[in-house]
Image (cartoon, rainbow, N blue to C red; front, side, top):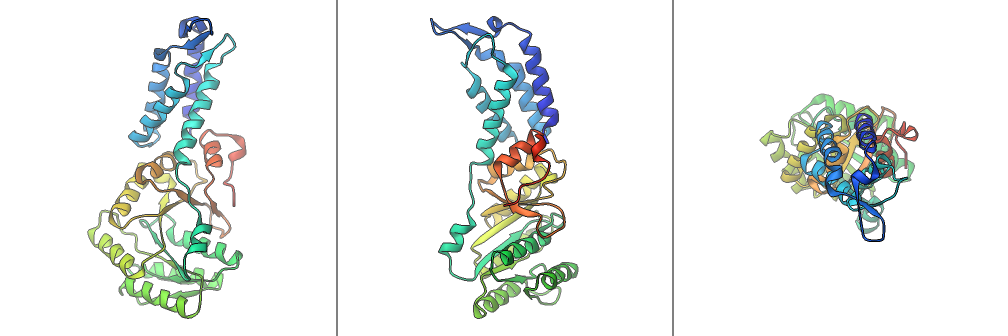
Amino acid sequence: MFRALRDKLNAASTAAKKKSVEDMSEVVGDSGRKLKDDALDDILGDLELELLQADVALPVAEELTKNVRSFLSGKRVDRDFKLEEGINLAFRSAVKKVIASHEFSLEEIVKTKDRPIVMMFVGINGTGKTTAIAKMAHRFHKDGYSCVLAAGDTFRAGAIEQLTLHSERLGCKIIKHQAGSDPAAVAYDAIEHARARKKDFVLIDTAGRMQTNKNLMDEMKKIRRVAKPDIVFFVGDSLAGSDAVEQARRFDEAIGIDAIILTKIDADAKGGAALSITDAIGKPVAYVSFGQRYDEFGRFDADWMIARIFGDDEASSPLIA
């Protein structure tokens, strides 16, 4: 995702390397030399600019650059010191600090919550929300849990049909009403059905009109009041960059988000959403979704994402866990 950034950093650090170690460092007593604070200015300026052009939110870009500077500033050096390796290591460390700053454990929720555990999925249309719900249901079935799907996107008849098709393929119960009906009533009926049948999970699909639509947000608030979900997942398109970050922020302000599912994670995105979205709302990326098969879904892995960002060969496809 950041191949261009990595190449530019390497080029910049290679150019800087043409300067002597003496030019870029200063003597510190009898203990050797350290990098000068101003030796990194040009490279770190380029770093911040490239992050912004990759759709990384400004506060995150500034924090990453600050962390790289903190890591390298005053670093002891000798004649064998390689600046590009130092920058690479510092940047990887800073990225991991952002990505892994929040954690999500479904296992802890399963241990502490009464059945059924209610999950609400929000996000705008086109992000792969309904498919992510089906993949989650498939994951639960593989782990021996039962679930009920709630067709809460009553705004589109096609959404009800799509979730119904998934329920038939997966062999799980779906609760649905006619198009145009009250989505909160669908969620309520699904929870009551799951409680009566002693099911483990209820997965509630919701409408996905634009996040600026007041009627949509009012609808989400009503579903939340009625369903009292244990977890609210925001489903975001990793290709959307800063738009996904803004969408997450709006949904979080309106109803509150507990965790994030990033879709289309295997595509050649800039990577800004993965870096920015957690920082923007202070919530973890819990799962990633890619492809169309039900098993193309797994827990978010910070190390894999970092390898992906830096274009490492071993990160060609998401890790499944």
